[in-house]
Image (cartoon, rainbow, N blue to C red; front, top):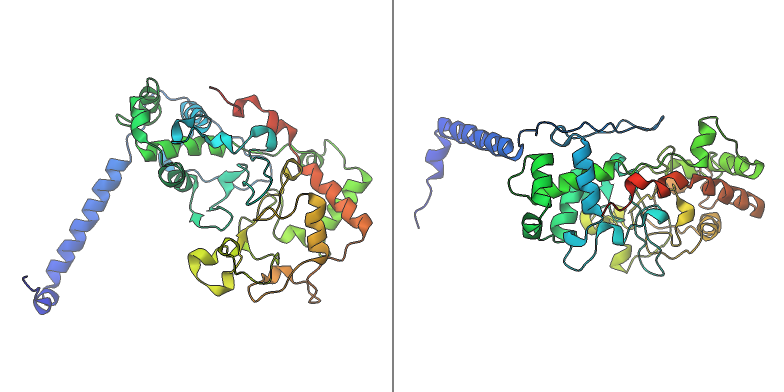
Amino acid sequence: MRKINKSKRIQNPAFGISVLIILALLTLIISCKNDKPEPEGLTPYSISIPKGFPKMEIPDNNQPYEERVALGRRLYYDPILSNNGLSCSSCHWQKKGFTIPTTQGMPVLPHVNMAWKDIYMWDGREQGNLEDVMLFEVEEFFGTDISKLNKHPEYPELFAEAYNSNTITSHDVAKALAQFFRILISADSKYDRVMAGTESFSDKELKGYRIFSSEKSSCYHCHMPPLFTDSQLHNNGVDSTFENPENWGYFSTSRDSGQLSHMRTPTLRNLSLRNRFMHDGRYASIEEVVDFYNKGVNHSPSLDPVMVKSNGELRLGLTPEETEQLVAFLKTLTDSTFITNKSLSNPN
């Protein structure tokens, strides 16, 4: 095998500069090839951002159009994405806030307000924008056989119209799915109407809201309105030891012991539609969850500091009446419009 003369290579800086220029040009060419020209004649789709919600970031190469949203919606409900007859909707029922009832194990995180997230999965192992996580879903989670889409009697024409695609790719499918995910917006619960001044809390709900928003409960630190999640990773003290890898959280990715059991903060929106709570589904009611925070938080070296109150106490210490009030408020986060909106339902 011929050996490379490293000393000669170092003594010729022009060679190194030339290589860098060539690599930069190749990167630009590849990038341009991936960004296909925008099709003509598409119908712009205006996403209505609820008042008080953060700005929605949308990639320049996947701007919203009605044809793209419709395509993503169709794919969401189509088992063609998988090799076992399942679609996204198989585990994400609209009537349950785009999650599914479970009896044991890890609860399914809801598909709601995901346009404002950049951390996904309970353990946060997938990060990026919606296009990034949809590509993971297509290529790894579902293992989609793209050839089936290319042979389909309708999808090639739909993708050609929406994305100028002569041949459907996994990136095209990810982009289309991201379009539909961006419109899965829940913002019409009783809480939202109260904030808009069109409805009022009951006395019990109002007291619960005040508890939620106070340092006594500190709920709002991780479940801040209007999304009712900070979309971050926390160890909330569910356990004190972590022998089971399923409880490792983001440590499984980072291998940083300070991140043991750091799990993604789920949104509290539509909480009353779920029947299992925490990353392992150990609690079966909202009341059980509040009871845990009230008297069951466990200390560990990786416990998030946000769980420790200013006096060093880990637990809330709510009275039974205060617990009832807090639960009453949490139930005002249910959005009946979201779970019955026909524009989000199965079009197939």
